[in-house]
Length: 390
Length: 96
Ligand code: SF4
Ligand code: SF4
Image 1 (cartoon, each protein chain N blue to C red):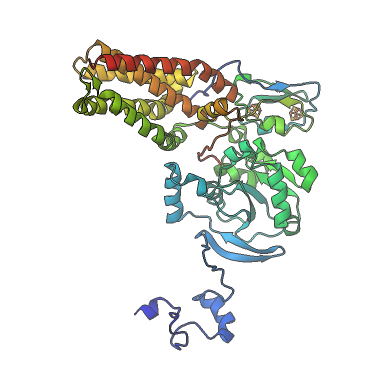
Image 2: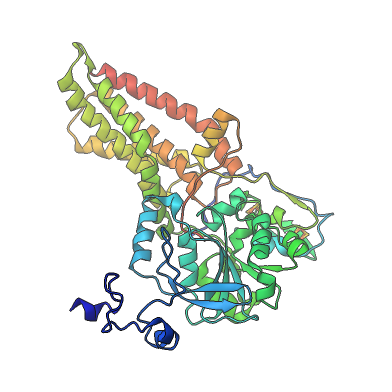
């Protein structure tokens, strides 16, 4: 049974004549056709794993180049989901260098991207039925946008990678297509000076690449060059935001539980539990208001500053809770409003780093004003809350 | 949906029109339509939409543009306040 299914013989029976692997001499011709056993020049090496997106290999002037699939498989999707939730985000990188889509030739276009697998996936799944080269830069597994900001997706790395891969021998033209956001790190005129390659900035989103590939640079509309920040994208960023709050959350929970126990009897475990869990719940609601609700409601909230938007959402949520509950006393009411507003405001302010329209100068200005207010509100809330314990 | 705006009058973007040779690169690389070309010269048309990414300045071959580029993420800025280093962040996101 199993012999029929797996055509390669187990290692213990290499001489089994029934196995479909022909003896080494006749191997070449048959193995090509049936492809039932990997060719002897096995790409398997101990400890190395071949990505499932590699469908074959191309022999070129500059060595063998992996051909990649233009469809995402299950593993790719699971990986994307993991990235969304910030699980092992930093390590999702592929090897830098040259990749082939279809069967490109020396005239085929060259696309440049980062070695963050999600960027690479987004790119290759827009390239169905095309023949071109992809030059992947080493950005330590970070996407183009952020890597360009850090300078890893930059002029130096691009020029270095062109030389290292022998791109000038592989293609006869001298044009590279970069995602527009790469312009943050790459200076087109410098690349030309240093490598002879002309940089063409394509659209921001990989989904718009076909327009450029079909119609040339003129087909790239202004809209394709603009960064928007639609609901879907805002939603996609919130999980990472939540996970990144995890560590602070642990500390906050611990401190709240200890503080909750303080009362007339110096310390009470039952109070620590009952009041503490309430406080933790309030804190979590605050995080939710600032890191999830505020980003979602962003365009509809008044004011420009994120901290103000967050405070509003937090305070609003506090009012809803107060109306729903039946009287918690003046101290607790004030504590609830202040703490929710402060926590939500802080989390919302943190979201500025995930957006695509906030300037660092603006964020810094906002923070200088907001952090003292947040700290003050939190302190007051703490005093009111502790006061209500007596 | 209207374009989202951030704080007014904080941006550090500067354009020296005398130096500009009108190559047309900066309007192309700007992701927010801050710059436009008029009569062979670049012009800042929507200053407050600038996110200080620095793409325009980096790709201007005559250095007519300048901007204090950086990352706009709060935790990175707090870190830089505390340590005195330049802000940098480990951002994720799906833009590519
Ligand atoms: S810094 Fe970025 S957003 Fe601002 S004008 Fe230049 S390219 Fe546009
Ligand atoms: S990139 Fe520089 S030279 Fe070219 S249009 Fe812009 S400012 Fe002028």
